Length: 318
View 1 (tube, one colour):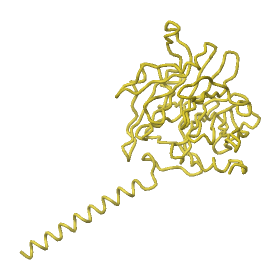
View 2 (view 1 turned 120 degrees about the horizontal axis):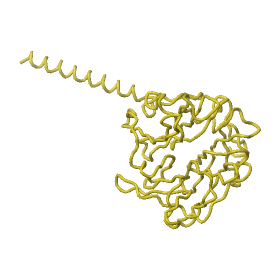
View 3 (view 1 turned 90 degrees about the horizontal axis):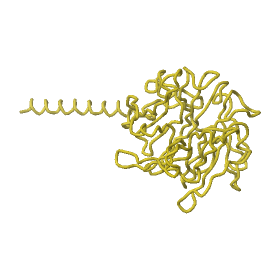
View 4 (view 1 turned 90 degrees about the vertical axis):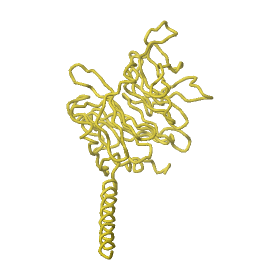
């Protein structure tokens, strides 16, 4: 009997030790990690290169689902044909899954998009058939509604339908539903525009002021709380490279401040595009080409600590 008690005691001790090690190993794995990746500091590092490999040539922002359980990105399939595809990776709380091609949205040719705050709608700049023009494809900011595991047919935001658009780029949205997007009218350079949500609709859109729209401005990301705007730009006097990343802040009167280049170390001598900040405000993601054209065989996602945003903020609005 005594031997049996001793054996049970030893067995329980072993189980306790094994459980302790399992918990310790798990916590050690998770501690300091983000999306299963070791986070960067103040210097940009390539993001998830085992998932978003050298076979991808990113051409979009990093797109996070509202719950943070999936990331999407657009990539060229090869640099010769310029064919695009939308990929995603699921996050299970510890690791990102192997990249998979998205097929549900592919039927509409949707590549760049942003989720509504509740995740039940997406917004994107695109050229789609327009029912009011007998199915003629037109450029506008479009939306799709979530229907179980599917998405509805795209519907345009009527005020953004314009046959003069030469192109429409990436879209961003703040917490009150205002939409920021890149658009280029025929014969003009690309500019950032804003369509404000008024009583549940978007009655019009306007380009942002010239202090923002100097040179060529693309790839807007509006802060969730509307405090700052990140974007990419070229043909500006303070360009470090071919296309650089910039930030402008809302001052105390609601006006945009003169944009600041994010500076060497983030802006490179090459093409830097598609900036965005994670919803929790911890990291900036962006894409760098590492070459004199975009994209290239060395185009990758990078991420960096968000501290630079606080450091560049004008003293008057700190």
